[in-house]
Image 1 (tube, rainbow, N blue to C red):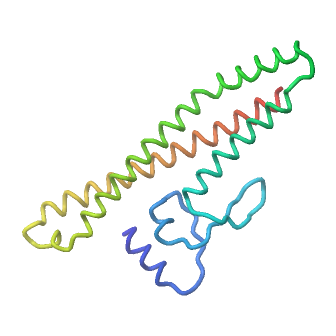
Image 2 (cartoon, rainbow, N blue to C red; image 1 turned 120 degrees about the vertical axis):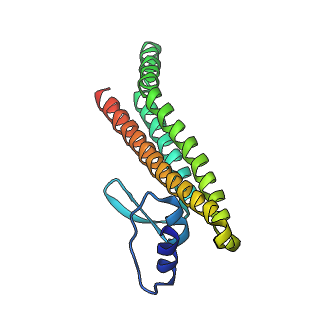
Image 3 (cartoon, helix red, strand yellow; image 1 turned 135 degrees about the horizontal axis):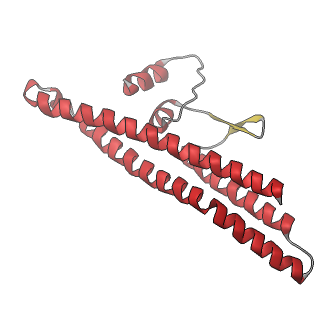
Length: 173
């Protein structure tokens, strides 16, 4: 069904706005990405991998800016700032671990799904003699798609929770 949707979108001559966490669908059907951040919508020049790198760079910049804001002028304040930075790292560590684990699991599941979809693209699989194998592969595809969606949701939830916690901690300091 997802492939049929991607093909229909590719054949459609008009414009469509797609909001989805389904990376496969986005890769297969999107020509232009838009980024919504800080209350603004801007064109994004890149693909999903570029967006992922942008998110990581943004997070790094935000951490650096927070460190710079807390950077004290004398040595006594420096110790306090280092202590505050260490506390921030400790408080966000579980969320970072959760996010990174979800990301790795998501990448593995997407690789498995891609391999499975390659198998499903084999026209000989649709012969009557291979009906059981086709049924098994289609069932596995559905399970993998469900797992990918769940992992994407888990990654997104962890990323949002991490951003929220970091913002709260920066506001509190």
